[in-house]
Length: 558
Ligand code: F6P
Picture: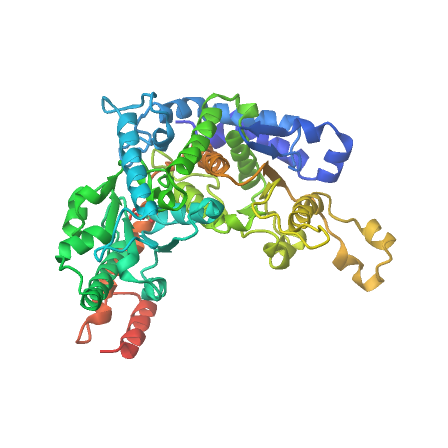
């Protein structure tokens, strides 16, 4: 099969890059005033300005040719039709079914999966309502005040990110915590001030075999049993069996009912999803149960409608007006033709503090691949390193490197027209105006920079001039929405999901497996008994690892 790098479309872009390498955004913006209107796109509630990219109409045309050459249309249709495009795991990839309306039909193995999706959603909504209203009682009869989600990777990052993002819509008299790390300090800190009688654990794991999650859930169960034993003594409440206590304080979200039962959670308290939902694409499935308890069923539904609106945009909009497609192609332009290695995600909203961590898994676990779909080593760069933190904090930390360092760092700036708290001073001065002034200033400064002439004209001392020049020409996408609502969050996340999909298609990698996490996992399983063995175990490792294990063993309490 022809590699993407062997297509005329790739060659045309490589040649075009040679011409574009020296073109400055300052000139592109000055010479073509219509550009700021032309190079924008609206997708649902999201407005995106990509005029501050090092592209011309010709660049966009060539990138769109590349998408055609990669067979993008056929792959989009294949995903939405439930074809088994996850080749190595022989699975369909149908996160879009999680937000399909009730009357849609998406068939997997001869069965329409949509009714099942809606049935689970209804059970989730009923359960969430019972917890939120206090009808669901703990073992001592008290209502739940804190929900602790135990999961890792896609079973943690999605709900944790979305809970933060939608905190303004959450039930404020309940607390929500997310425990993921197998580091015992994580769960110890999370449980430190909690009352077991008022705590509900949601154990979220697609496989229910993930060692971190099972270890944390076991610790939580022991903590609960010990704490409830004290509570029963103190309250002299009616005696409940251990099974009842676990049943009232533990629910599970998984595809693996057998393992859930084995752990001791009643499968009546299990919310299912399906193997055609990848972990990093799952927070709009039952994996989002903790989020649903926090924001309620109707708001969760609004979020799903947002996801679906972006799915429809992605499925139906012409590629030249298709936001995920355009974002993906711009990424390809920099990662493959300018050797840019990273992508900064810079949300100007504190509520999106965990967005880049979430997108790291979505993007890097999906497209961090070096063989193509047929198993050949690729001859081009694949997924970027994704990173970032909310503005304006980053401005006082690493923006220096973006502005004046030697690397090209494309960035997505995400902002909102209205905040949730319109925090003001007595004289009317608004935080949000200052936040957004920074938001607009940064993309302008990154694009235009400051020339030597401008620095000289500003009267800067001779010895500082070189240090105060900004080369500019740093590309950014600006994404704006009215306010961070559940529907807008759904659209934003679906947009990134589809962006990652498009890039996977262009790079011809399977974006839906993650074999790269296996080697370290299996080595850890081998090393753990060596750390705890009573007698000095024979060690079959490299010299460095052996020495480190011995050092740990020497310090370990017996
Ligand atoms: O990191 C590997 C991975 O399989 C992720 O893809 C997944 O989100 C995470 O582990 C957790 O898996 P599970 O939900 O099965 O516990």
